Amino acid sequence: LVAFGVACLVFDLGRIDRLALLFFTPSASFITFGVFSLAVLLASGALLCFAAFFDGMAWPRKAIRLLETATMVAALFVMVYTGALLVSVGPAIELWHSWWILALFLFSSASCGCAVILVVATVVGESAFVRPFVRRLLLIDLGAIACETLFAGLFIVDALAGKDGPWWQLCASLFADGSVCAAWWAGFVVCGLAIPFACEVFASRFPSLRFEGSLACVFVGVLILLGGWCLRWSIVE
Image (tube, rainbow, N blue to C red; front, side, top):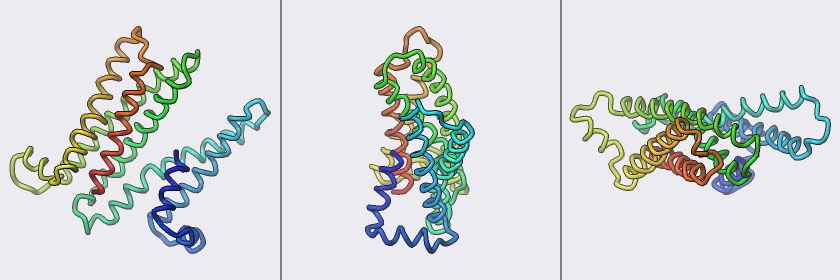
């Protein structure tokens, strides 16, 4: 998925030599920061995938731990650099002039990552490993969605700071375009936050319903991914 995203970025550049310039003549910018983070993430992640496919071989445990650490650190950089890029343009675009975007994108990315695994776990099917793992993952995603909701609220408050009028009118004017407003409130808030959070709370309170590995996981995962897309599209648009 990360490789597909990188391919989309390269396609958006239009010329592969522009990508080479970022590597060979780097500048102190968030774009350069993101490019090198993506490169490290792709390289270390590919090596981890290779080791996983050939798990019968005796891989040095220290080397695997080092790769996992490098992948995690690079992933964290990738999760926040787009938000940092938007904030750096903030003085020109008022909505982006908020450091809460970094935390919002960070926890949104964490939740979307959980969503991908929820969907894949359903494809994998029943196993002694998958069910307990997904059960723990649901709790992690609950925390990610809760933090995402908190920072989305702080982002809205920051965007409306200093403006007069009823809060519901101010919120409605924040995303004035109809399609953007629908993407934020219906796509992100309802589909990406409220429904998945309610479903995961219900699943954690009633484990006997065997929510893990069911089509309900696919439903929740797809909604979270839709919400993550709507969040980014509405803010950038």
